[in-house]
Image 1 (cartoon, rainbow, N blue to C red):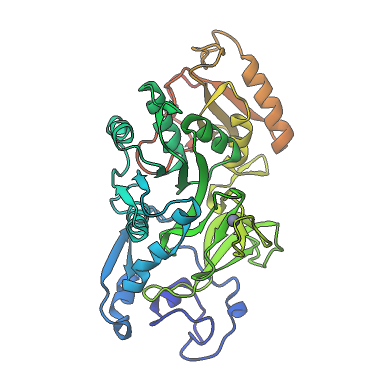
Image 2: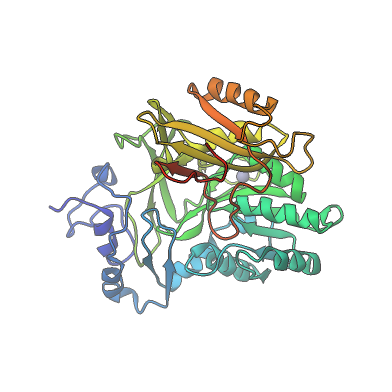
Length: 421
Ligand SMILES: [Zn+2]
């Protein structure tokens, strides 16, 4: 019997079943433990050719942003397309008929924009299909159309919030936003607080991945905003040890593993996502009984190993953003020029901070209080030394479209950020 892989799951015709996918042999879900892969193998065309019994495939969604960096082709039959709408991330945020949804997720080769759009239409909401980037145009549209729901990546919500503030649009003064549905990248409670302050809305996490369906695999409800309800009608979730693939108990962080229960084209069986989060069961004030996942704390492949200590960028973010004088922009530089790698966190003062604007890595002012304070805090939290430099405002790269780049490696040559030594 062939070893089960995600490739095999791709080649299954018909809805994914938890048993009986290997040439009719009956196997339990547990027997697939540890055998799944995290990468697409470029075999999606095989799926398209093998879905005859379900009738023609009505939609193909092309997706980039897959973990391997390669473009993949996602096949979606009609039922699968409706699944975007079925998943109730927008409903959980309080959207419904009459809502105006400003959708700033990308529409090109990314399931985020298309998935949210389809869900919004299905709800009877009005959707502003603005896609990502061109921030001045987004500000104009928000001012003129007064959306109540904002959907985009959390790093872009900050960018947009700052641009709106610059245009004189603030909570209670020109903004009607009630809730934001922010996904596509890991983010922290500290970033949530910043977004809510800037935009005056309830900031909610949305989780999805193109390989599984796109947005709407799990979503936070506005009532609790405390963990994401996994849409168990469609997806079976498990959390496993990222190294051994053994299941971890509820409450412990593990790598999320999904099996699709209703997807007809490209079903997945025990697909290892690489995303680290903890599962939790129990009642929720919103009435949903679906299992909750914590916010994703990192990706297995984003994990940095500094002097033998495992660090996720989100752990550093929590400390940096806990310092209120700093802006939410930061960049982690893994300095690999010497034999032993060092981690350097670059950040900027917030625009209205009394901090020394212009303090830079040139050493002209010596290390500022924020730097010393943060280095101490990071050492306490992470158990390893992380250098901190507050650089002049505008030094760090901003992300207009797609996912924010939070980590760069510096193996030699020019520094990743001007002025760094
Ligand atoms: Zn809830």
